[in-house]
Image (cartoon, rainbow, N blue to C red; front, side, top):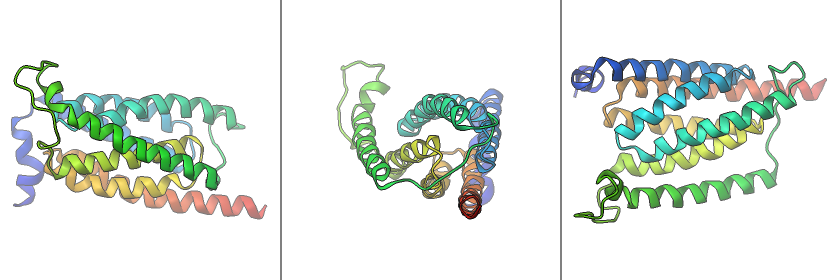
Length: 223
């Protein structure tokens, strides 16, 4: 399979609005990651626009886990926006620290609960796809492909990462790096080539973000 088949051919059957939405969601998503690297509160308004767009896109593509994570992103972005504004001296930038052991325990519990919740949603996916009708519906996980299972896993990773991000914890970038990297082949498989490129950019930016926040914390500690 060549690059044309991976990144161009799937879009031959998409309408202009769908392509425009995906491009817009990717642009605002990249802007959001850029602002997060800079510890700038604009990470949240740009992120909210991107997540709302992807709620629509991912639901239509059957990636319920990722759709759910974007709903959660929207809620957590509002929470993080308020928290960052409260903890910022100039109402724009924040200071960052490493997570405590107690916070890691909370994140682990959140990860496990997310795995269970998203798996449960996929269990009832045939019922959802059948317009919430029991007629001819068979519950189960038999319909999941490898991308769906990866969706369950990455959703749980991103949930924990988003929580750490709202708390201004450097550890959040570890979750972003792992989750973004996994999403690259998953989105190609689902025919979302533009989004897969976005996740490649996200992975690179997440590594840079981790290094930048880590350096910033060290410099603040020396002062």
